Length: 337
Image 1 (cartoon, helix red, strand yellow):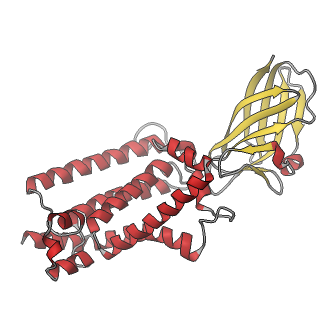
Image 2 (tube, rainbow, N blue to C red; image 1 turned 120 degrees about the vertical axis):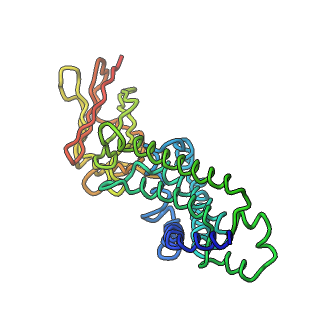
Image 3 (tube, one colour; image 1 turned 60 degrees about the vertical axis):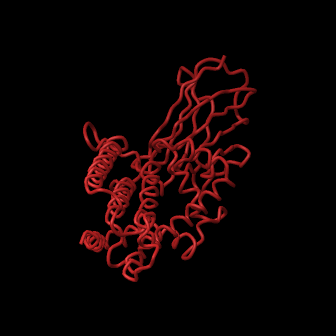
């Protein structure tokens, strides 16, 4: 009777299991079957997409930064991640080792949530995918696969292994715990997941109290370490906000002294024709010249060098200003002694 309750519960969550499973299996299907998104030399490389997570990731930023700084390690990580998504998603839909796969779904969703929960231009896209994936994984762990799963097929066939404790924990069927323990796990897990939902909603978007914010709407560029040395201007740019599908297009660079006099300038045409030797990229998402501007993809970080046209023996306070094609400007003040 009690086992029948689990069969019914698993049956009622079938749609959730199939849809959640497809969201992960489809990632494998898109990247390797429909297109090859694991080729670093082609547009759409998944490693560059992963680089987009970096600027505002929660808790896992050091891991992301290490991977996007080491292209070989990044490729292996993306390949393994894609294969894991494919296996977990397929087995989850089929209902094979359903509870083990539900833990995989929960873990993958948590990674998405922490890495990209801040992304989404028109709504909270990645955050919603993450929190709902975590909740789906936990729910299916409690219910198991139900009628429409291969786990239950093996149970109906009275396979010996289906009565083992390990199968009940990793597959489907009646959980081998007391009812009071299951109630506590269901309640405490739900409270933790709801708490995670509220915390990340507030952290990424201010969605619980205070002012709402969306870091994916407008491009923003951080300027660091500006300096003039040996008659050369150098500084680091880091594109840390804005849409992941739309770059920042730099059309002007100006250097002014403390009186506002223009000391050095790069025009839109000059930036569009900037040589590779003037750009030192740090990550797989690269700052590069485009047809009409210097393109700064989301998550890209690069040191820019200019050793021509800089007046000699410059000293004093200066302001470096970058102009985006949207009209946005970013400034950094520094002193040359």
